[in-house]
Length: 607
Image (cartoon, rainbow, N blue to C red; front, side):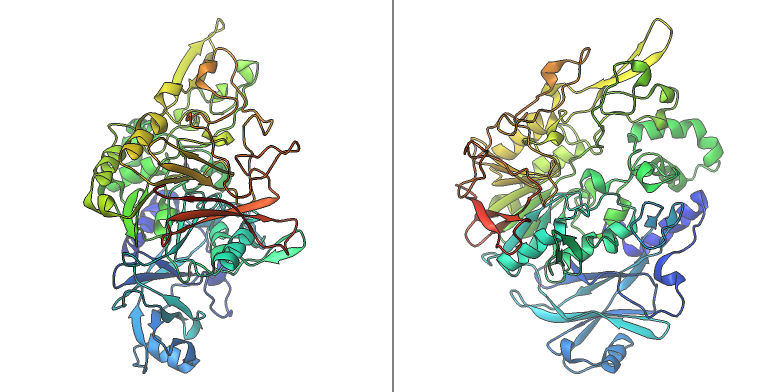
């Protein structure tokens, strides 16, 4: 991980110095209860003979191990305890975990937990990670995790782990995104497992939860659809009278995510987690604000305090980075990375920005913080402004991420891969609402009216869209087979002249709609003085025409086939079969739960 677990304590200490300590919540505050696992184990960063096993608890504990071997399921509690405390048990191997505390997880009044705290309250959660070595290529080995706290012990069920897939080893890879604790997500994942069987890896194109620092959205949201329970078959979300448990996936298969806008937490020190999430500002703005207060907040010019102050007053992805152990990319750390997954060379990019609303009041005196305007009351306070839909990590020509990407698509690993997949949260093409405005840095205009009032507005020049102008041409010229994105919560796909396929399969039953002549929906176009040529009411701003599903497209009332799935009655999932190179998309009708998912689209990579 970018911040290895033994560094978490340093981060926690600095946070405590700057912002004070908060009272603990959860299991550590409930004396006399038996220990429990906050998550079942999940797999990370496989190599040709090893894999990381990770799990989380609400206690620090003294012993945390992974027990591996054919006898793992047979061991009784005494044998499991002996294995965890150094004893040798026939038929299994034991791997000790490193433990560190997550630095930012918290709850507040909006948390879906019993008795939520009235204000933001730290929730103490510990992460345990062990590297299981000596695995044979293509093998599946039983394992369990064991944690001991103050003499009490908890052990997981028995699952199977495997090292990285070898070249030529067929895999079923789930393509998904935008889970966000939505009602239909557990149903989506449960049906994926019921349809496909064993899933070998998960490519998740961002927006795993809603507010990344809210612990319950990851672990135990009482509505029954938190991130880990849904992907570990431990959910309990009821829709249309049917309760869905999700899919038992991550205990057996590694997950490779990309950062979406919902993995980014905004400025600290605000009253609620939601307000913090919605209040990021660009790093340059925070750096300028720091220079004005540096002598007060950091009289000794400690670089760690400077870095922390700027981060806490701009935005961060720390909770996401602490939860996952991912490949790294040098300057991008694990925020963007590349790795080989069997026959697939996967590139995960950091391409997202803060989502802002579209409303523009007719009277500038009533403007609010939106993608187009600032509230007049914040004109004198840069940290209180929204700065439009600003991009979190630059990705256009000349940026560090673009330069890294150009090197990666020219690398031997990329050229030698049977299939190449690029994953990013916001993509160059789409029919959804969130594909607008153009993906570019907002152009800020400050104007003063006759009464001396300053008004701030933002425009987004269409010609400056870095995803369509810079990123897509690079990917297509490199021969990328598949570009997977999310963000707009629907299904649609496109094919470039180069043969590169663009797929958004983010409607896990939570669609925000398609904006296309056949949907009857239009994106709002800002009024004058905004330039309407920069905005598109319907269709794909990237220019490609959408593909019709090849098997069973939905139709409109007149019987016209639709090139999208936008209805919340349907939950969609897609699977890449590396044995055939085929990507298959399924839709599940939530109104008829007894009917199995239907294949509605298939296409071949490289075709």
